[in-house]
Image 1 (tube, rainbow, N blue to C red):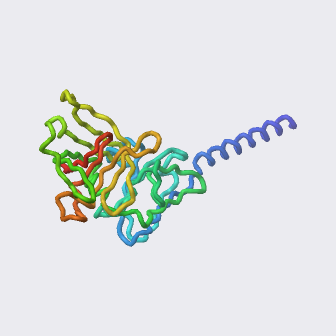
Image 2 (cartoon, one colour):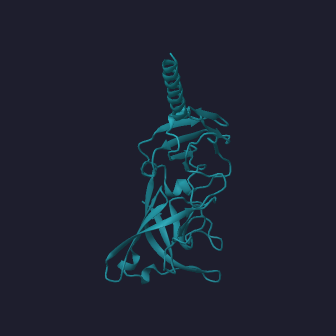
Length: 259
């Protein structure tokens, strides 16, 4: 009898242990998204950076009304796995399209559901025309050079386009949602050189991204807000389909138009 009691006690403890383990493995914490904006927001969630970059497939898409709090059951996600969020207003003026590696206050793309800390804010203050200019409602845009300028306060913008060879005029760039740009130019022999440039999305009213090296140093930029074709001395522009670019190792401002 004592032996049977010992066996039953052991089995009971084993069952309790298995049940406890099972509960622990499925005991997810709910994931909450808080829309702090006074506007409707679309929230897309992706399983990987590749999916985020391509814009497909979307794991889930939700529309949050102004100031709405969305609570998703924890088992929507795999605990401790990385996910990628993408939120934006209909006019694209407010969004979280900012690098995690160059964090802007309140901005976040990658998130990892963990027990006890799963609230993510759709924060105020993240706004501007970067997304409208450089993604244009999709996952990438292509730009080509149509002019090149020098600039000083004394002279304003001076075009050097007519002095350039066809090789020197060739500058094209593809801006991708994953914060990598594919930049192409031609050397003196006419050979096309393509290089990848990491870029930082600046939190600014005008379109403004900055090319960065591995050490976090600036290599150049693409920016709006002023154009040589606008009125001096301020050259103010509100265009989102035409910007200026300073490319690595070039002293010129290239006027780039979106294709």
